[in-house]
Length: 227
Image (tube, rainbow, N blue to C red; front, side):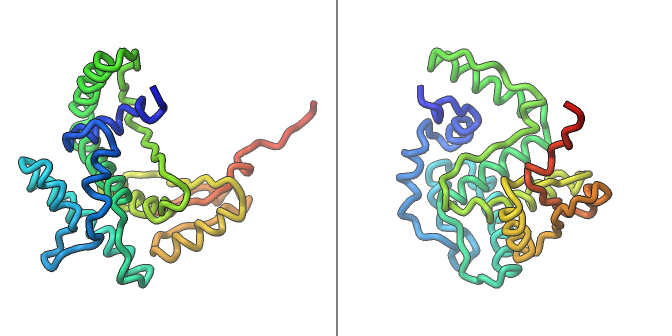
């Protein structure tokens, strides 16, 4: 199996919409108009409702939440024509579902995932270990270069604050180097997200009020002493 065929969480979300292959879902959405109709519904959600009519009210709720995030980006960045691509929309949709399930009923979500995993292992003759509560504390995105991950991360920030009810002590963005730290700082400021660059003073490592600390990975090492 290829790596993408082992991504059980991704397969779980695709299965919720009635698919087992992302390419098949992509075919349904790739040519759909971006943006929103006169009622405020995205053109993507109409397609998804057609695929999953019993989920109409739920999908409309998620679609409304995504529209609110997009509107915040538009206003803060002064880009009134900003819209999500279909794959960006799906990434935000899957994250919205994940966070809602996690914060409303983490144990139930864990059981649901492991039931799906059991079927997945049986069908694919794999032996992937069951999800644990610790696993649910991590969420990764696999997206191509140039796919707009930076702005999606800004939306992810708003998503996690909303669903966690701002219950975070520290929010840290780790970058590969100082140049990218500065780039992320500028982008976050454009989106109206509070942030600061690590300046080498350990007293400034603490954040408050949803602030993001931006630090490049090389500053996380301890000075070598002795041999």
